Image 1 (tube, one colour):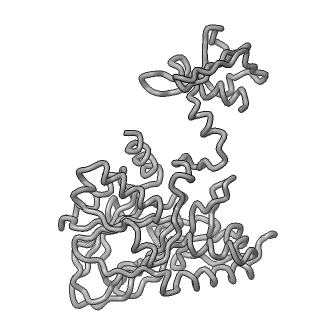
Image 2: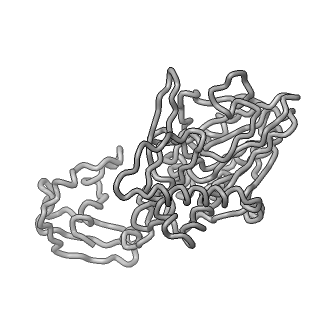
Image 3: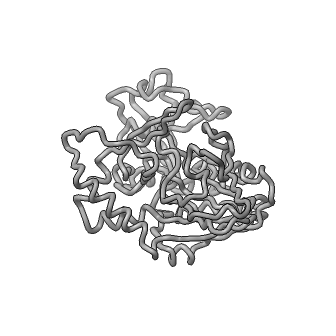
Length: 362
């Protein structure tokens, strides 16, 4: 391990303020030729103590760096998550089809979720592994989705509001607010930071039809990765622009359909939202649009296969929570012969990761 990395990792009271938890020196203060004078292990305490020949200016010879052995072992692993998440080896995403999802821990109690941290942690583990979970017996309150979301973290406010309603309305600016069929997509991909978790609580389910549909995009792109290298390469190299262009709101952002998480080259995010996809302007050097068109057609074919689609007609009192950067969602058409009302909310990934870490540390 690099001496500068070891010195920078020091968490003694002089290097990290014990009250605020904030670092008291800059990484740039570490001398370029830093040398370790002595290293001593303390097996019983599980730490290593380091002394420096030429420490950071302002730190005398009495300064010692003590590092937990477990932290050093973690630093030497190859599979850490560069986004700052929990190590992937412990809870790598499980790619699912309909049958595999139904075998998972899919249904959870609202009461337990709201009152028991152990139940909350169990639900978050399901979200980490499968990207989707359902709560049952949620109270018929318009505020319930906000209460559910804030058990994980703050609401992500967008131009739709802190929470928002999914109802059929005349001359809707979004097909979600009609009774029409709504194909597989992800929300707000025209944002620089799209929402990570999406929550939908069913308050009224009187209309005929309108079943929700879900599919695991990770499973689909991994199938392409294993069998069609040229198509896989197109999915993670060709940028696709999504946009929202209306009088009062204008958003756009480009990213590949598949984003990888760095050195481990695991799938981090999938980006697919045909209703909001902008036209390709022109190809740039290195882009292969013919391969991309073939790749996205193969992706669509896979997610539409019957065994890859989980279909469920949401009942009053149900709330689904899913990873908007992984799980595709849509909805069958419905008749306007009764009220259909869902209330939604978003939570960011940072807050999901933070809540898991806090609960796992207890």
